View 1 (tube, one colour):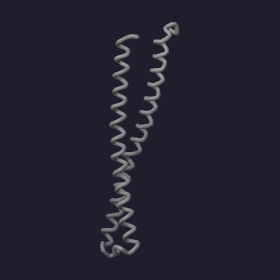
View 2: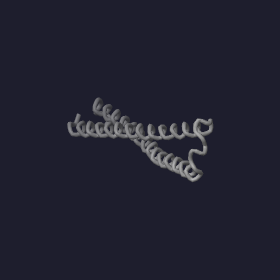
View 3: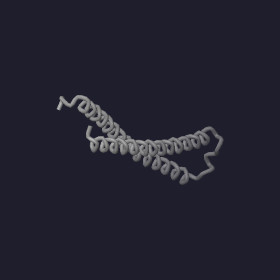
View 4: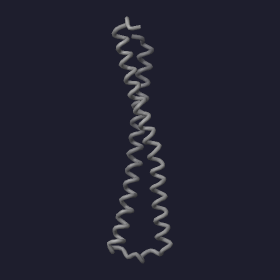
Length: 115
C-alpha cells in the first residue's frame, strides 16, 4: 500500500465529510426558516378567516403588501432550497463514486496481480 495514496484518500474523505456536515446544517436552517414563515402565515390567515382578527384591522393596501411580501419571501426561500437540493444530489453521487473507488483500491491492494 502506497503511503501517499493512503494519505490522499484520507484527506479526500475528510473533505467530503466536512462538506456534507456543513451542507446538512445549512439545509436544516433553510427548511426550518421556510416552515416557520409558512406556519406563521397560515396562523395569521386562519385567525383572519375564523374571525379572531377582524379583516378591517389592516387596510386593503396593507393586506396586499402583506400578501405580496409573503409570496416573495416564500419564493426566495424556495429559490435557495432548490439549487441546494440539486447540489445535495450531486454531492451524494460523488460520495458514492468515491466509495466505489475506495473498494476498487482496496481490492487492488489486497490482490496486486489484478494490475
